[in-house]
Amino acid sequence: MRLHYLLDTHAGSYNRPIPTRDEVSAFIDQLYREIELAEEGGFDSIVVPERHGRTECFFPSSLVLLSVIAARTSRIRLGSYILVLPLHHPIHVAEQVAMIDQVSRGRVIFGVAAGYHSGYSRMFGIPHHERGARFEEQVEIIKLAWTEERFSYHGRYYQFDDVMLTPKPYQKPMPEWWVGGMFPKTIARAGRIGDAWCSDPFPLDQRVWLEQVHLYREAARAAGRSSKVVLMRDGWVAPTREEAEEVFGRLAVEEWLFYFRWGILTHHPEFQSESDFTIERASRHFILGSPAECIRQIEMYAREYDVDEIVLRFRLPKGPRWDQVLQCLALFGREVVPYFHSQNV
Image (cartoon, rainbow, N blue to C red; front, side, top):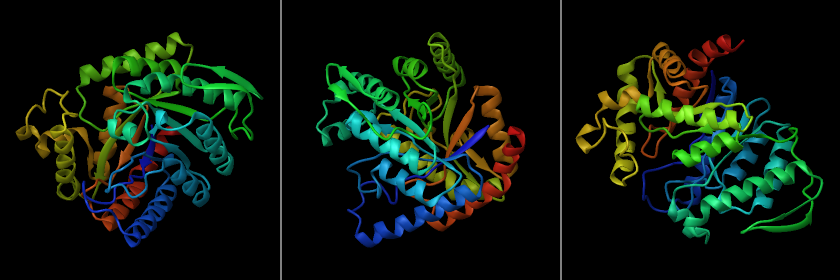
């Protein structure tokens, strides 16, 4: 089981005022410390999200942030979780990711998806209904750019004649592709074009989840590709479960309620009304508690949910405090990560 750390770019509550330059600078210093602790703690990678036009997000550009991580680390891998590919020109993405892979000496994980947020599409002038078809073309173009000396491409949205991308990525033939999606079509697409399928941090219905995993792995098998399931979980480690629930659990329940009120988190039978969002119910879907409890929960996802790797997030828009996040990250690196390193040998 490999463990990855999501370097979250939220730095305040939703719909807060536009941050000042001093607030942004202070948050960047916090990110630097989290990067250092994640590498010191032995996480397999640091992955970063992409968010735009939201005042609680102090670092919207995932590719710029990956460049920062590449320059400040030496061992840990670095990846996007998830780059919303239709918002970008595919040649720009191919060129920038190739250079980040060069700077990091081949440590890039390339996580992509078509995206769900219509506000992002509006901000970048991309018709939201075109995102799936654009995504398919972009994947083909980036793979050609990374593997062919010169190439031409003529699609519905993009046309290129005899173009060349140089330099190519450090990794040969290219970085690993992680592909997100939570609908049958996008899950199967992850199997067809990617090296891993990525998921969100929301509650899982085991039966539905295992059906999705089967769909993904069968699509990968049919395409002649290996498969890897990467699950994202919110979590917190503390000396006791009570402390973990007090510091993080209640904040995580509030985060789920935010998405529920927007109509996004309605798919789980246990969470159909606001009164269902209790810490007792929700905590079963976190990685939360003492180090020993976190280890058991991670092993449970591998054993009962057919998960290969896990991405962990320790910070949400409303908290915990930044100093508490550093303490949690350090404790997880000391007490949880080494256990799985010993299992991976």
